[in-house]
Length: 56
Image 1 (tube, rainbow, N blue to C red):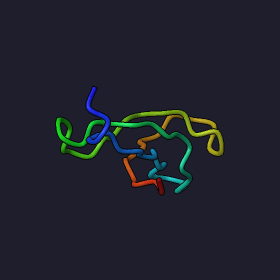
Image 2: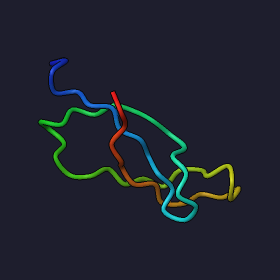
Image 3: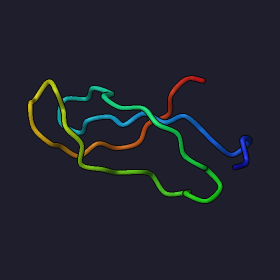
């Protein structure tokens, strides 16, 4: 795995605005923004979470 292309990202809830999850992705192979249905603890239900940048 090429370490230079890996970036830290956060997954931000589209309804409450909290960043509930963090992960990494290869920026060279996955250029589109990540969008997943994940559990939001504040709302106690599954919601859409969209990719946001995290500080390194």
